Amino acid sequence: MTSITPAQLVMLAIRKLRCGALVTLLLSSSIAAAQSPRIILDVADAAVSRGIDERTGVTVTLTAESRSSFADFTAKYIGRFIEVRFLGQVIMKARLVTEITGGKLQIVPEANSAAPTELAHKLSAPGTKIEVGLFAE
Image (cartoon, rainbow, N blue to C red; front, side):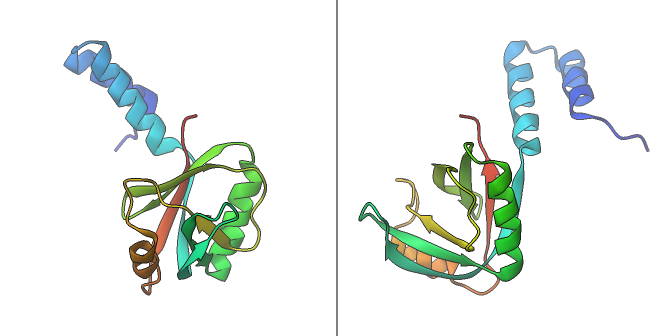
C-alpha cells in the first residue's frame, strides 16, 4: 500500500471534486492544522487559583514526564501563539514568552469554556490529558 502526502491529497481532491477554491482552501487548512506541532500532556492535578492579573483561573500541574515534554515544547516555540485544548475544546490561547520548566500552567479559560471551578474539577480527574499546540497568529 502506498502512502499519500498531504500535498498529493490536496491535489487529488482538486482533481476529483473540482468544486472550486473553497474546497481547496478548506482541505489545505485542515491538513495544515493536522500537521501543526502539538503535544498531549498528562495532568497530575488542577486547582482554582488567581493569576497575576487577579483573574480567576486554574493552575494545572503536569506529571514529571509531561513537565519535561512541555519544557522542550515551550523552549522550541518561544514567541509563538499556543492553544490549550481539553476534550477537543480550546480552553485557552496565549503567546509563549518564555520556556516553562516548572510543569505548571496557569489557565484563564476562554469565554466559551467552563467556569474555573468546574474546569478544575474536570481536569483533576485521574488520567486527564490536555493538548497543547501552535495556532495561526
